[in-house]
Image (tube, rainbow, N blue to C red):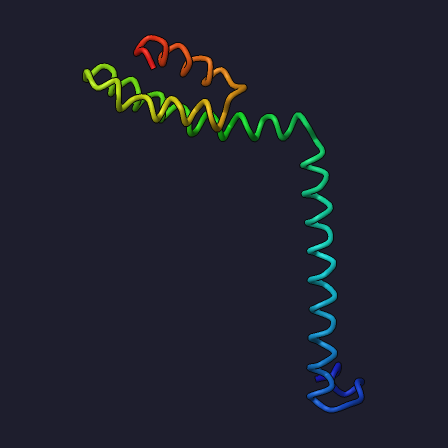
Length: 107
């Protein structure tokens, strides 16, 4: 109540000012987030770790599926999983393993 007694203007004007202040704060937060994202993207080591984590998550399950199909006598169904690894993560240890398995099954 003390704050409202010190301010001049209608409730609508106060609400307009409040919304402006919130908008300015949000702009500052968004700018800080964008700057942080740019810094992170510029960090080659960080980006390499992020890519490797994504590859590890995807490739482990794809390699497992491919091996299961090979072990079950269905190597033709293993191929798409291995080719996905090569397409999405070509410069990883998982791609090397996928290439070996593709060679073993003759694809």
